[in-house]
Image 1 (spheres, one colour):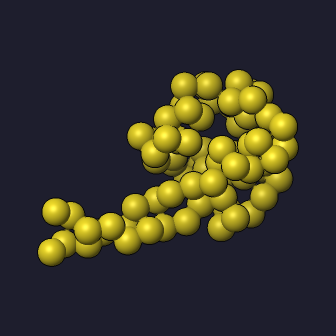
Image 2 (cartoon, one colour):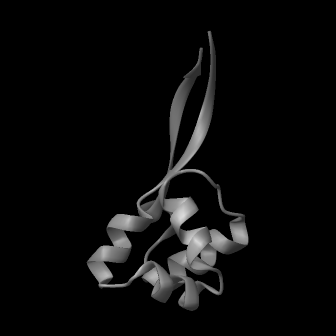
Length: 74
């Protein structure tokens, strides 16, 4: 059984707390709405740079928005 760390996020939850649409967050972070959607659904992992911009836009610490989860490869 192989295990690996997967980067997860709370972007959607934090975005909704701020009252931001995906489009508004994308504008603040300098990316696209499609990227925000892909991040929220786990289809895409951000670069360190983009994750930092998202945290600035959401006014939160990195560890409050992103976390790692151990997953089994089966």
